[in-house]
Image 1 (cartoon, rainbow, N blue to C red):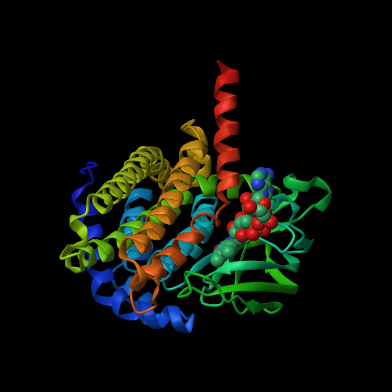
Image 2 (image 1 turned 90 degrees about the vertical axis):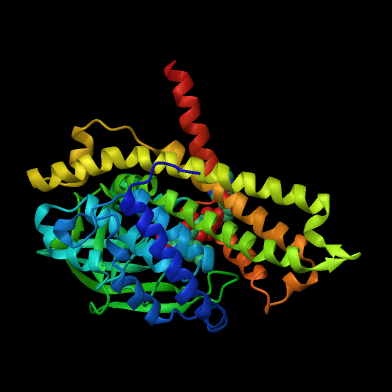
Amino acid sequence: MDYGFTQLQTEIAQLARELAEKKLKPLRAKADHDEKLPMEVVEEYRASNLFGLWLPEQYGGTGGGVTDLALAIEELSKACGGLALPIATSALGGMPAFMWATAEQREKWIPALASGEKLFAFALTEAEAGSDATALKTTAVLEGDHYVVNGSKHFISTGEVADVYTVAVTTNPKRGARGITLLLIEKGTPGFTFGKKEEKLGIRANTTYELVFQDCKVPVANRLGGEGMGLLAVQETFDYSRPGVAAQALGIAEGALNETIPYLRTRKQFGQPVSSFQAIQHKLADLATKVEAGRALVYSLTLAMDKDYLKAVENALASGASVHDELKKLKTRRWTKESAMSKLFCSDTAMEVASECINLCGGIAYMRDFPVEKYMRDAKITQIYEGTNHIQRNEIAAALIKEYAAG
Ligand SMILES: Cc1cc2nc3c(=O)[nH]c(=O)nc-3n(C[C@H](O)[C@H](O)[C@H](O)COP(=O)(O)OP(=O)(O)OC[C@H]3O[C@@H](n4cnc5c(N)ncnc54)[C@H](O)[C@@H]3O)c2cc1C
């Protein structure tokens, strides 16, 4: 389907598709087995300027928005949902850093984010604060020109590999959700270490780590927005980042179909290709229809949200204000409902497609030699991170009921 992408967006998708075929596919099985991110993949992304797709040219990006980012994530995920992640997690950690930064902070942090010289990551979740992020306990106490941070985060994607962590802390535990603040904390800062490395079901090519902070001194200049603005920054970030998870899910679903359909054409039983059985054909038709519906949802959303985003970025560069403040001035709408819908629908679709592809191929697809089982393992996470699908449903329902209450 043609969603009206620009020439540049079409070229980004093509570039990512080629990279996925030529560079990711040969590496994915070993990276999955070793549970290690091969740094040559990050080098490829840097060389192809994929870290700066959603950032302005002024800082070394390519001047696009969420659509450009989603297209790249989708194409890379067709080969491997785990190897695609550094692009997505650096954007997730980088979005609050870019959107809430002052002009001075942008100058300091964004060129390295855009070039991929520094990978960003996002650290919200704690052992006792998952779906309820407001229960977080990592504290930051102001002492002169720095905060002293104590606590830990767990399940942090691209952990240990990433260079800069956007960390949610509480600067005022008594205020609960209103005490949450975001700080940028660099790898190598004294008092910041990595704890447990997780062993996972899927996206094993991406490292998942615990972060530990013990009397870690972080300059006040690394704070994003004011104290207590962290939860709003996180919520706004999810509006823009969840379509990226949806795109990852779509890529995984399409990748599973891309491995399955050629096999079904060549595999013969009862003297004919398995693809000639109508039961198989109807299942393929249903799965492909859901994937296309997911694409329509994701890209109609990203193309709409990019209009406001790109305008706010342009205004922020001219005024020196933050992108968040410029979005506010534009009186733009929040995309929480549609963003949650895109992640909910596409992640459930990815899980269904990958699982059904195993059914369609039969026993071979249960084996590690055949790439389809990995798609099912990788698909699962898209239903969990950046808010489980229960939480997406909660958010969709809350928005819906509010709309009806407003009349
Ligand atoms: C591989 C991986 C990578 C991750 N990467 C990151 C990362 O980079 N940064 C980061 O900050 N976090 C990351 N996470 C954390 C992830 O976002 C959380 O795991 C997720 O938000 C769910 O939190 P939880 O695991 O604590 O589950 P819980 O919150 O303990 O949920 C348990 C169950 O209860 C359900 N539930 C909870 N509350 C409600 C409710 N109100 N209504 C209905 N059902 C509810 C949940 O849906 C789930 O089924 C990652 C997780 C994984 C597994």
